[in-house]
Image: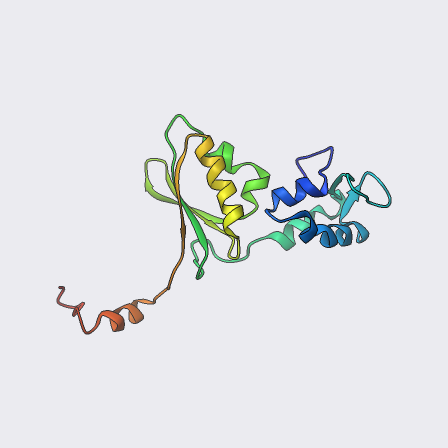
Length: 170
């Protein structure tokens, strides 16, 4: 919303966060009551436009900050494997505020314009689909994935211990 100087309606906000308007209405009203959001009317009604109160921008960004170390993966975390041609700017898509707020971290993935982008844990499929659609619309190839079981090296060795002796190879 901060890149929308004219504000966004409840419907526009709901689309940006991949939720139904009714699911977020109470939260938006609470944020307005607490002066985190400004509105174009004192008593918000249908069609009211909202925008972030710049006085609270630092606090908002701190609360939204992802404090997990880059590269850390969580069970069922969604990822997007990206291959960007040289003539297409991946950063133009990833720089869009309505898309990059749900990204936890990104890593170069093999070079030659390949990246692995990890969504914030808990990011749902509809929100990840929006990122994938924006990337594909820009001519960027990508595949959506989800993290399954995570094993330590010891857990993996115990799992395959009866099949392969990892010290001697297959």
